Length: 374
View (cartoon, helix red, strand yellow):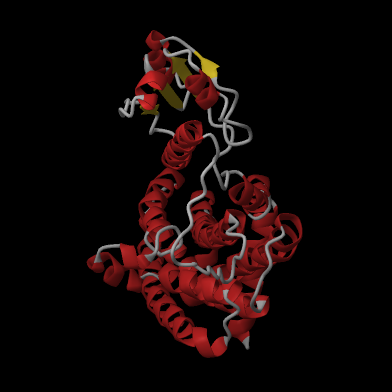
């Protein structure tokens, strides 16, 4: 009972210390409120207001027809420019697409020849470049075909394709972005809070005070794990119910309490990682650099951004040792597809086992660090 009491009281101390840190509180609030909303709505789901410029060398009925075929909201009003303005405009970032309608375009089309229409694309704007290029090709082919036939021809497919989209019928990107941002922020903040708490105690000399008290390294570490994990879990709960469901309007298919149980297991692993990193780093700048080296692979290779099946097999196997891989899989199954415990229990067991290993390693490192300071 005394050990439990020590862990509880030390955890309360951690919460009070966090409460007196306004910048950290602001980071937590932003990450689970405005940060979630921006991640869900900041990136356009389709081509939207792409800047386009057209060089009309032909000045014919067909070229004018093509120039007037680009409408909002997919494109901005086309800028009619000269041929010598295309490259400077793309270099300066004024245009994403530049179309060159060559001289004698209409004459060559009517004569049955195949004139070349040049499309210049600024591929540095990746979110619009690839989609927009396909849109432009389809629009030009459609306008040329309609001009030749006098009417728009609709091709009839010999087979009727019936498409059934499950779990996201409208293919809304905001549904995916909001939930995945929560998953990433749970991982990031749990590591940041625990690691920063340990380094802050070392810099302020609080850890020396704890060494002369009748507490063990296990109690000190366990208090940080439950206190910081509770903060992140509370923020995650608020974000799911208020930001994701109410503000963004994402329908959660599965059980949020079941997801929170899995998130609690994940926090057990990531807070242990944060303490381990806090024992390795000697200052907050060092911890920040170490955080980037650890956090980026956890986010990029866990299957949240790119499906694991499209990664090299060696990467897939290595990332099975990371708790984020199983957390992303579990979260997507519950929140997107409405899976129950009978489906996600292997991920629960994997996260718990990985968390136990990380906790043991972090505790061993923490004991050595305290022993060296003593």
